[in-house]
Amino acid sequence: MDLPTTGQVPRVNTDRIEEMGVEAPTKQRPLLQVTGVNKTFGSVHVLHDVDFAVYPGSVTSLIGDNGAGKSTLVKTIAGIHPRDSGTISFNGEPVDIQSPKDTADLGIEVVYQDLALCENLDIVQNLFLGREKLHRGLLDEQAMEQAARDTLASLSVRTVKSVRQLVSSLSGGQRQTVAIAKAVLWNSKVVLLDEPTAALGVAQTKQVLDLVRRLAEQGLGVVLISHNMNDVLEVSDRVSAMYLGRVVADVPVTPATTREFLVELITSGQSGDVGTARASAAEGVESPQGGTDV
Ligand SMILES: Nc1ncnc2c1ncn2[C@@H]1O[C@H](COP(=O)(O)OP(=O)(O)OP(=O)(O)O)[C@@H](O)[C@H]1O
Ligand SMILES: [Mg+2]
Image (cartoon, rainbow, N blue to C red; front, side):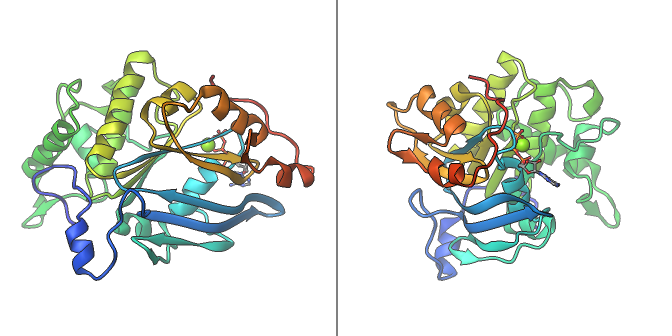
């Protein structure tokens, strides 16, 4: 994976994709497409024939109640959980994802809710952990510091005083920002964010949501998992709703999309003509407990 020397968040290079003889992804053509994915843990069938698509330059929110399968889907895409069946395509080509390294090599990065940052290391050390930049066999501290500063600047992050600050001294929102910066530092094309605002206050949530929008404006395909429907409506271009392990709706967000519509999809798997709750209900699966912040 190449480290962008300018520190700019890379755009999806559609010219190069076209040169490679592959149809370039567009807002209509997914960058990442999951088709018919099933995942079981022992005898528990968690993902049922899941279809899910991520478009470049778009924010797709993945919504669903506690236990609906959102994190499992993300971890299956990330190569943490092997899937039982189904395909994952990137740029229209099926890809063989066996491990998180395969996903990272494709330019797919995941920010997990627990963030996996090291508190006792500073921002630069965290950003480059395991992928340190070397110069003549030694750590190239200057280049890493500059790239860290450039990346935060390109994401319009202004609240972090120094890239040499320890992560333990950062607020929750700043940590989330560092985790997102770490994900986009590596030529990423798709970023999956699992509940990035769950633990944040109002101002910090706004900062992270602004950042989510900026990533999409820079051409990335962004997936946002959130239980807050106001946030979802504010930043999303599309919404995929999961209910008891199935994707029951994949709809664009328009000015007419309401919070009530999304909440109904989450709680009953159906709203008006949209959704397929009946298939799940017929299986007699117990309904999950509520956890939606509405
Ligand atoms: N490693 C695992 N082993 C066994 N079961 C699991 C495992 N991971 C998840 N599950 C089960 O899969 C189902 C979906 O869990 P998942 O974490 O994907 O839900 P979620 O939609 O992310 O929920 P939340 O909104 O609470 O984060 C749950 O019933 C959960 O208990
Ligand atoms: Mg989850």
